[in-house]
Image 1 (cartoon, rainbow, N blue to C red):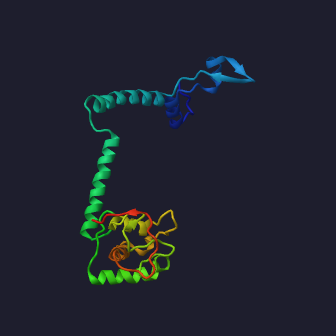
Image 2: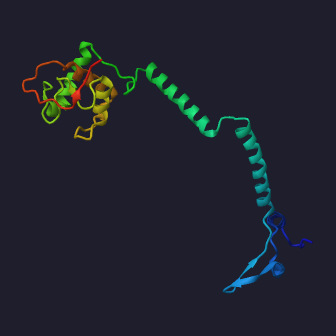
Image 3: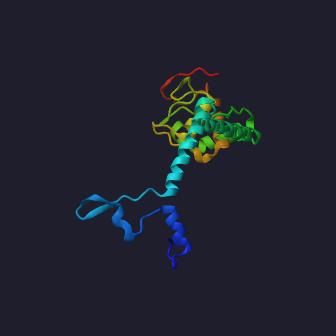
Length: 206
């Protein structure tokens, strides 16, 4: 029977935990002890037991829904959402003419190539020489390339750099990188004053 001075909160706590009162702990005390420390055989709290039972019940529905009926798992749903988001990003880039390594194309108009040349002379000529013949960096006018001679490969190399000493130029921005990459491609077949010996493998251009 609840004590008269017992608050509503105390009564609720008793119902939720079913803990044995301190004065009655001797009735649930186990026989063994260790260094004076004794263990009480208190029952599991009803809320914990209810949660455990609910979990088991839900697991049965989970198994039936996903395993028996073959519904998509959370991983499959995640992959589908990622693919949908990627499609939305690609559509946005296309609609707003945003360039990246997947959408970059060769620019051939005079204005773009002139801007690309200006960027090249300012940032690239120190290693590749103004006429593209190569110095620290490889010759950009011949048919031999280390990382590929297509626009996407060149765009990627300029953007991310290489392990052979080429620094990344991501800070230029995709538009400028597209222009300088297009200008680099326009150097193919030209006659530099002091061409560096070929490096890499022959690269067939598309």
